[in-house]
Length: 67
Image 1: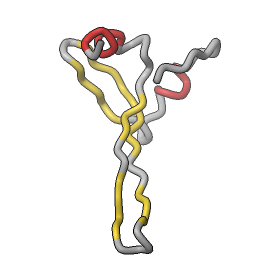
Image 2: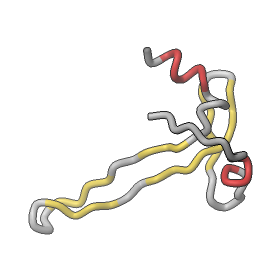
Image 3: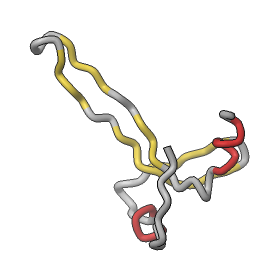
Image 4: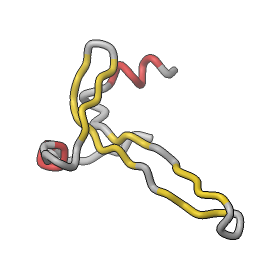
């Protein structure tokens, strides 16, 4: 899901220690790696829903490749 912002997002994605390197084909950049844990099934199962958040303007090829 792409979100549209009028602000300059470089300040958010230029934060050493919080971002991780991201490579897709010939494109490299940074993103946020999210791995939130959630306990479900009355405390029996621990699940993790992984996500990488990047600027779509930097990784527009990914959107084209997934159509």
